[in-house]
Image (cartoon, rainbow, N blue to C red):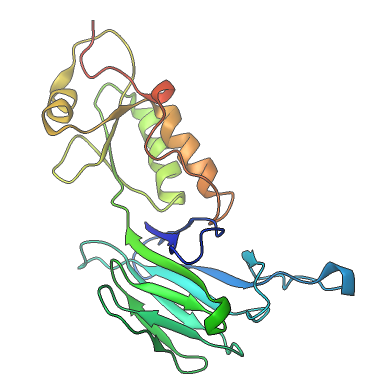
Length: 229
């Protein structure tokens, strides 16, 4: 998944997460201006994140992640939604930002900064890819593993049974059985071993929207020992 963190110039913003939901699919996260309730303002129904920035339009921009079978990880893009004061992208390491055409879009890369609204009030986010590939250990029952696969897929998380190169987390039972190959490899690679409840908690948080706080890294209460007793 992709993480959009507040830029140094916008410390009050919430961190957002954008996930792809399978090859060719995209989940759009729409940002816009918070309505003025004192004037009877009402938020647009399809705006997921409301920002207290008067230079933004009610529907300002959309971030979306796109998965492809031939790509190492999902791509991220931003689209301006015809905003009044525009959307700009400053490439990683660049000094100046380039404003998108009204209604236009651009692909984003690691470290790019997206600036929304008027220059003096801009809300800005920094893009970063968060690798998340879950391996399910063999000590997890087949029935539970199948359920966890459905949970992970719904959350846009890559998942497979057995430990493979590139895995970022291992889900295993906390029992006292033998450690198994998966746990041994996870220990060797420094990959955290988590209880199934962690993946379920991650999926539940993802379901609450792009601004939900995710259990990343997994809290200590949801970790399990790599080597059984």
